Length: 377
Image 1 (cartoon, one colour):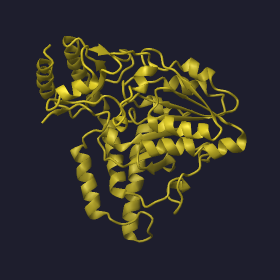
Image 2 (cartoon, one colour; image 1 turned 180 degrees about the horizontal axis):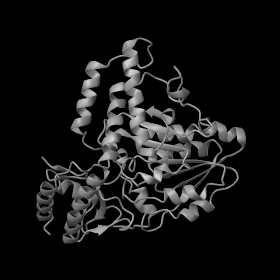
Image 3 (cartoon, helix red, strand yellow; image 1 turned 90 degrees about the horizontal axis):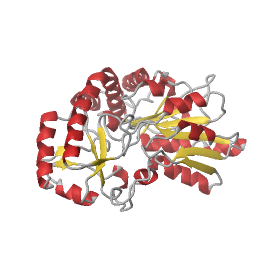
Image 4 (cartoon, helix red, strand yellow; image 1 turned 30 degrees about the vertical axis):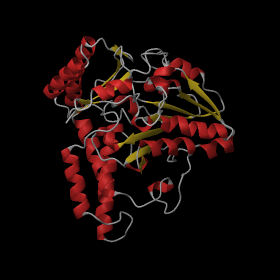
């Protein structure tokens, strides 16, 4: 079996988290909205998970809105703000060209509804210029949406600089933190950020659970409306019976990720050094900033090969992807790399290697050497 190097798409679940989910499935099966003792048990576990998440971002329990994942959270933050924009005349949105499709497509929906959308092009290193983004903000700007870490390149975006530049501006600031939550702590703790999207499976939690952190100002939630109706759960923003086992898994995964942040980071740095040495040995061309990239991601092209050819060559050795997992059915080049100005043949040859603290370094080294031999390098 190949070694798994596609952790930016989804991570293997932490055994400790899996055990907790299984325990809750077996022992706590009540509806968190029911008034009896079984419902109270479930409600307490949901409350604990909220508390575990707040330990990462410094928020309050009643600011955590559970969703099915970061995609839903992004949609709730962006589409949910539309009615407020139409009511107040704030019909302008600012984002970047390198956002996840879960941000770009909702923005396109609002464009069709009469909103004006400004998308900032990244620098060639894959990082947004915060001054350029702040310059795009106008009096009628409703919302700014920026990812914390790019999912394809691993490049860290200047979330703090943008937040600090918005202190005197009256607009919502949303951060898609799917790739950075519980891996970079301080940027998300900036109080100027209004909305934060997170996802469980990016931090070794279960798939199918995430949250939108909606920070209250003067006791009021941000002016966003629900996308679905029927029950009033999650402060009226996301109705439906809460998946308590998944929520418990997300909470524990967040707590563990924050507590073990430094040792996980050191392990990923060690692996990154080996991957970069291997990349150099196969004449790999690295895409993205060397100074602002997370330690668990490398995006590269290998001259003489398309991404499809590399993925085929690596079958049975290393499992990698050619970009965002949700867009693999498309044959178009990466919109992220295109926006960075990367041209052919590097553009169609780019692949992403991503790992985690659960990746075995010695095993990775063996598989990378086997892959190198397969390429004839």
